[in-house]
Structure formats: C-alpha cells, structure tokens
Length: 111
Length: 117
Image (cartoon, rainbow over all chains, first blue to last red; front, side, top):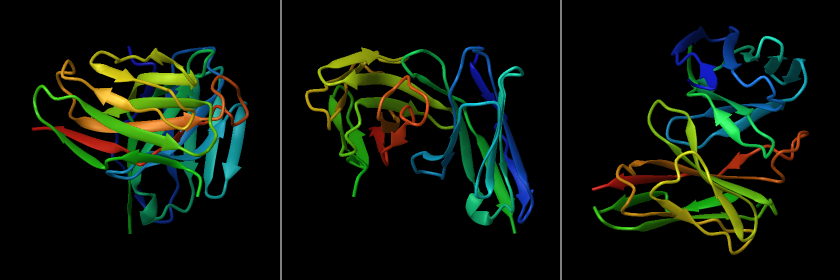
C-alpha cells in the first residue's frame, strides 16, 4: 500500500485559472509536508513546506494542510504555461526525517 | 554559488560494469541522500547519510554502495549486482533531518541519467 497518494493526471488547466492538487498520506504521525515542482528531465525544486494545519501562502501558491483528514493540497492561482510540470508531494514519515514521495501530478496549463 | 552538483549528467553502463555517480554540496549540510526515479514513479530512497562516516540503507539499497568520507561528498556506486539500473538518479541534502522548521527540507542536485547498454 502506497503511503503517499496523488492523482497522476494530467490535470489540464486554462491559463489564468486555479490549479488544485491533492495529496493524501497514511501515516497519522507525519509532521512535515513538502511540495516540489519537477519539469520534464529536470530535478525537483522546492515550492514550499508546511508544518501546521491551515493555509500557507507564497506568491501564487497556497498549501493547505489538514492533519485530521490526512491530506495536503496545493493551489496554483493565475496558472501560467510555465507552471506546466509534475508536482510531487513529500511527507516525512519517521523521526529521522525520511521523505516519502508521491508519484506526482502532471499539470498542463493551456493558453 | 552554493548548491549541489552531480556528475556526470549522462552515464552509460555496459553489462557487468560498476559505475560511480558523484554528488558534491557546498551548503554545509549534514545530511545527504540518494534517490532513484523511474518513469511515472515517485522518488525511492537508496541510501542516506546523516553525518560523516555514517550511512544507512534506504528502501532499495540492493546493488548499490556509498561512502561518506567528507561532509561535502556522497558518491554512489551502482554495482553489477543491480539488475535494472537504468533510471534517473538524484542526490539531495538537508541541514538537519528530523527537525521541523526548514532544516529538514531536502534540496536536490540536477541528477544523473544512467542507461545500461
């Protein structure tokens, strides 16, 4: 059973719209959560981290965490073609800080 | 410039050959990691090191070996025992694993794409 689940997509989003990505995890004691963006053929780059329940905003990106429901989401406002990438959710699953990655959601922003 | 470098960018391996992938960081991070990524899949942990001269196996360590003789360097050897090594290999580092507040954030190098001929 996968510990971190994401819809693989592709998620097609019109330019200027909001992209909504979801991630669920199975380990109730997880405390640290991360979103990475990965362009095709490139390495993942950090978008943001979130540790507490609620929303965290950084520019056009908002991460939302709900530990009781065991999900973390990422909203991308005013989506641009340059946002077309695969978005990876990562959850810390044990005390030493091991990351468990989801398989990623592919986002395609159409002009 | 601070960052993580990996070399080579592309690597071709013949059957029965060992190859070594380089990973260097000048971020003064304590922890370093090696991941493998296959098409359509998430990252899987091969080995990790929390401190110099110490490292632990990850989820898929069979057929791989590492060393951590210097804080800045964490090379990965793909041995002939790894039967399906063709993949994208990613090295990462963090200030301090297991602590919240940003020091557990992992940053990635540009990756090495390994192909078996």
